[in-house]
Image (tube, rainbow, N blue to C red):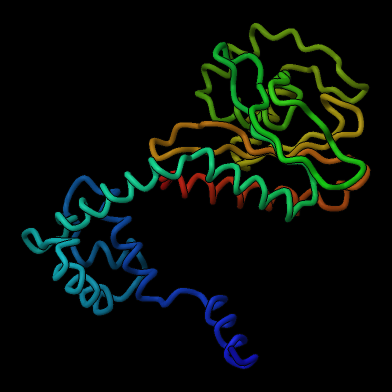
Length: 268
C-alpha cells in the first residue's frame, strides 16, 4: 500500500459518520423509546432534523421492514426486532464485563492513573472493589480486588449513594456514625448529604485525601439498559499530581462511564 493511500484510509477512519447514518440511528432510538407510533412532525422536532430528510430515511427503512407506517405515524417494524434479537445474542456472547474491562483500560491509558470498578454491597453500606487496572506510573494508587471502603468518604461511594432514592440516602445518613480516616475526612452528616446531592446533579464525585492520605478519587456511575446502576467507575490518583487536572479527570471519567452505559443499552 502506498503512503498516500494509507494516509487517505487513515483520514477516512477519523472522519465522522455520514449525517444520514447518524439520523437513521437516532430515528430507531426514538422509536424504541416511544410506546406509541410517532408522527413525522414529532420526529422532526425530537431529532431537530428537517422533515424532508427524515421522510427519505424512513422510506428507506420501511423498504427493509425496519419501520412501518401506522395511520400517518411510524413505529418499529419486524426487521428492527430481528436486528434487536441478533444484537442481544451478540451481547450475550460478548459479555458486559469485557466491555467494562476494555473501557477501564482505555481510561487508565488516557488518565495515566489507576482505574477501579466499585459496587455496592448487599446491605448498601459499603463499596467493594471488584476490578482494577493499575497505573503504569511508579507512584500510583494500589488496591486489592475485594477491598471494601465506606461510602461517605470515597468518590465511588458518594456517586453510588447519589444514584439511590433520596429516602434511602436519608436512611443511610440517619444510621451513619462517620469516622475520621484522615485529617481531611468530612464527618459532618449535613455536609456529606450536601456533597451527595451535588454529585447527583453533577453526575460525578471527587474526593481529595478523604479515605486515604494523598489520594484523589474521581467517579461516575455505570448504568445498564434498564437504567440500573451496576457500579462506579473510579480513577484513583496521587493527590500530588491531580490538583491541576481535577476538571480533566472528571471529564474523562464521565465520558467513559457514559460510553460504557451506552454500550450496555442505557439511553437515559
